[in-house]
Amino acid sequence: MIRVLIERHIAETLEYAYEERARRVLQQAVSAPGFISGETLADSHDLNHRITLANWRSEADWDRWYHSEERRELMAELVPMMDRNETITVLQQSSV
Image (tube, rainbow, N blue to C red; front, side, top):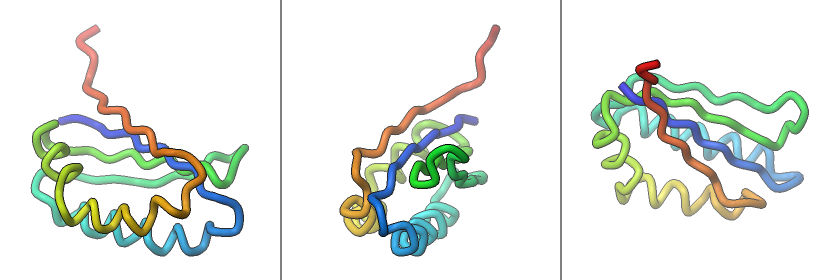
């Protein structure tokens, strides 16, 4: 299993519209092969900073979803509401 950390920063006044569309992205990811679970959190010191932590069966499953036409179309609606590029970090359990 891997975890994917996605960080996004929403432009001022677009929080409500962003939340609505971000829910659609997560709903579609849930049905993607290899998706296990996910949650989205708001930074308590910057409410426009959102962090999504998703668990995937494998990096190949995540890559398939990340590069899918479905995600590309959904992100085309989200990207204009962000004031920075999203950052994605793929995490795996450390052997230490």
